[in-house]
Image (cartoon, rainbow, N blue to C red; front, side, top):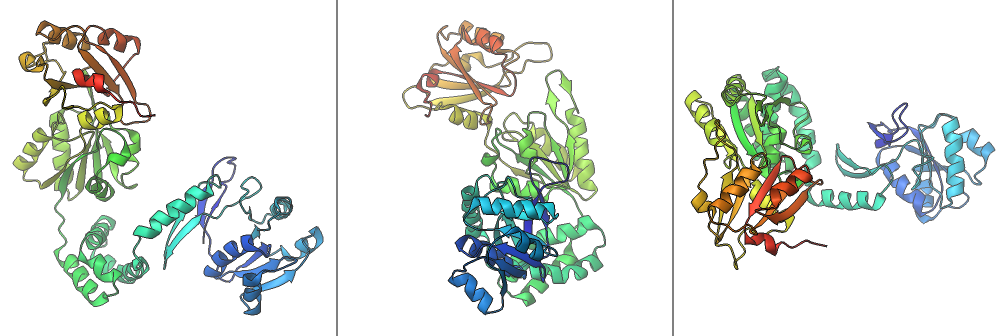
Length: 469
């Protein structure tokens, strides 16, 4: 049974554990609808339920009549509870009277018996999360007792997409573990076999109960398992983890090694499998944690060692992400690779800021440029193209050279009052949007201490910005 219990010495938060309740005595105080909900859960886990309640509703009485539960007491009082509580694995205070539940909880706590006062986390020493169960597979959803309706809604969503045969799949995989481990003693090799099985037709066969076909597929994987590594260049999008593509998330969960950049939000790394090796290769202005040539070499080294390497980048790998340079090095080294596009910053940040990049009234084109200066400090940009008033210009990495960029656009024909917006940390909770003009935006950014990651949007579309309520 999945429960959540406080970690020792921790006053806030809950520590998740699993309990085996098969045959264990559990005291259920209450005989009404509240008790029914908890009783059903306990029966599902094979607990021996002992009930204390003055009256039992029809469902609870049915359990007693069928021998599924035992009615051990009526009136809830201290003397009677002290007689029945010792030896119980858990106690549920499930009456419709909060004061009574708290009295039961205090007594159980004094006897060092884990107790749950239903819908009242304060006196509880554990809480029971909402659960989705498919055989041995159980998913528990908890809000630490703070938002049970939200937990129930999440449970409904999980119920809708978890196949009914998931339990069969888990049972199949458990029964074939000796076969896989006997063939591949190394943990990483076994993981790869099972991941390939789940990603292919094997999982479908096991879900449907066709173990013969599943065995054929598994045996083929055991014979053909390749130890050659691979590199996945994956775009993580502009920051909001909900903007990850399904394929990006899939590769993040399958990678053995992850090379990630400086501007990648930490929340995205939380989507990576827990046991993956994380290698920071981020580049900052004037300070490279790892030069590009070393990044290329690191990818190749891990791939040739048989590992699946995730090169995780913000935005899209092929839009100012140096993805082209990286795949050229992989091709030269003979390393297999795949590319997963991501939502680029221009699209994601503009949308979250309410700026339509190609509004039909003022922008027939959208130009992406980088604001990075050359090594000698010169901005070598297509100024004539950028100064076209019929388009939107989106400048990546332009904060450090913002005064020069704005001056260059004015010098090449755009008026001083031409609209400009800066979207800092776009799509993230800390997103800020500054709007101004070519002549004012640099001072505004300096005053507001704008820092990377930030995107500069130049054009009349900024005047069409819509702020949602």
